[in-house]
Image (cartoon, rainbow, N blue to C red):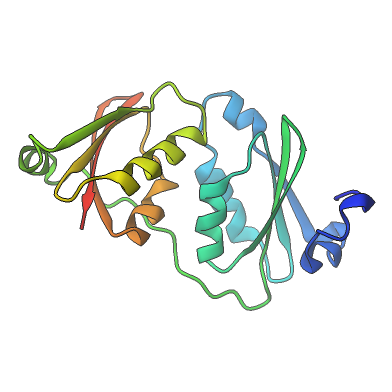
Length: 191
């Protein structure tokens, strides 16, 4: 739990939680193995009951995850303990109202047609060698600057599941093409 010095900035829902109401999930080993913990985290959120909180222990503030779970009705609070230890609490109110996360549905359908449509209006970025959460931030920044009638072509090492709800909220569509087990191409364009 947060130290007493930070007590004034800690939200009420954190201060009122008892230890048994907090479910810990340390995703640092998962990240260190090169795996995205997204599915593990979403499965864990399904186990959280009203009045409980999921505490994710990570190496960075998971901004995309915070946005996603807040849209589902969770209340979030992050505390940076040190450079390699960041705790983010996701509190589930007694009555949770929110939207379900966006799931990829046949994202490869129409790849060739969309690629042809934007063939002379592509802006390409490569995020394959960046650590999380940098790819998400770079992609969203590029989408904010994307000229009308253009598409963003992204070289990625996996389908960025955290990005999908953001795309829907920003009114963007996407297509993806798996090139190899560790490379995915994405095409993002305005809906």
